[in-house]
Amino acid sequence: MLAAQTIRIAVLLAIVLLYDKCSGYPSVRQKQEMALCSGCGDFCHKCEYGVVISNACGVPQCAKGPDEPCGGRGERLGICAEGMSCICNQCFGCSSEKLKCSKIKDPCWRDFNVPVRRPAIM
Image: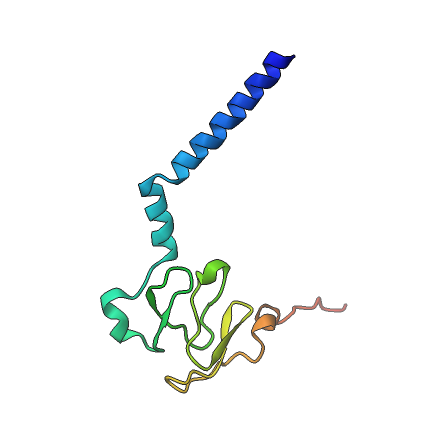
């Protein structure tokens, strides 16, 4: 009984140690950072709504404009331009940079604006 419990603990310990080594492997870590940290690089001057610094990585990114996706886990979808707010993962308000405003009145209800087909009464 004691030998079986010792073997289980050893196997669990081996799994934990191997998992730590695999997640720390440089190519795995670089792929994770590349997916999260895509900045504008040499093309920041072409950003229509200005440049913001990524909260997750500290690299410059193009700011998102009206009705563009934003937020998400670690703000992976992007950060809204100055003067706008990220509401329901969509930039809402007016951009101070280009003075363009959202066309959607309520970003949280955008999926419910689809017309409903009612069956014909016979």
